[in-house]
Amino acid sequence: MKSPRNLTDLPFADELHEADGDLELEGYYDRVLFDGSSFADADAGGARFMESALTGVTFDGGRLRRARLSDVWLSETRLVGSDVAEASWTDVWFNGCVLAGVQAFSGVLRRVTFRGCKLDSVNFRECKLTDVLFEDCVLRDPDFGGAQLTRVRFPGCQLTGADFTKVTCADVDLRGAVLGDPGAGHQGRLRLAARGAHRHAAAHDPRPAASPPPGHHRRRALTAAGPSCYTSGQIS
Image 1: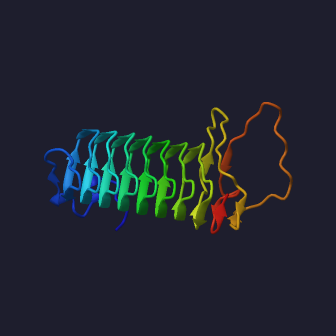
Image 2 (image 1 turned 30 degrees about the vertical axis):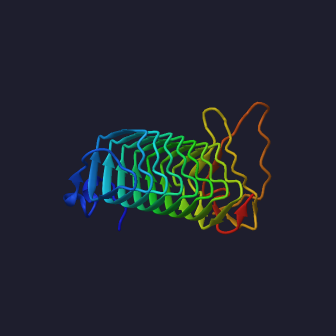
Image 3 (image 1 turned 180 degrees about the horizontal axis):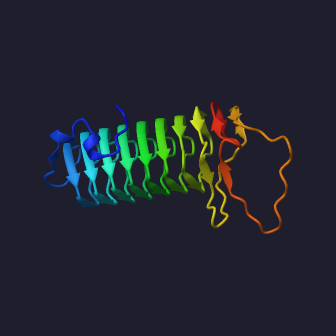
């Protein structure tokens, strides 16, 4: 299905019904609309969300560990300090959402889109990401340590303090992403020397780069003119 940009783009939009009550442990939510709901320390581990939508929802803490989401739309939704570890995300779209201090380690993400989102200290360690798009997002201190990334793209994103230690990549495209805070000169931790991986650049200038003056910090922009894409192997 084509990535929807609005709630009305969902093929099941007309069949959604308003949610009733709090989230439940191992609950089942099929074609449910959560609109403006607020959940504090909710325990919905093992819950299943099928063809549902969340708009303007807030999760403050809480557990959704091992939850399963399939064909789910999230818009202007906030997850703060939530535990969604070992969850399964298939055909899920995040639009204008905020994720802060979220524990998402050991999860499986397939065909997931993050568009215009802010991710702060999100733990993706040991996750499997396949066909995942981060578009026009701000990612601060994301942890992808030990994750497996396949066909993952970051166009228009800013990554600060990104940790890709021991990540395994296949067809990962970083063109258009910026590493570090261009205002503060803070550099990301992404190591550009990949072990057993291939880096591709659309253009290459054989001349050595000039050394910046003392005290000058340059941001690294991964664009078509520089190292942009890991196609296979592991970044150490």
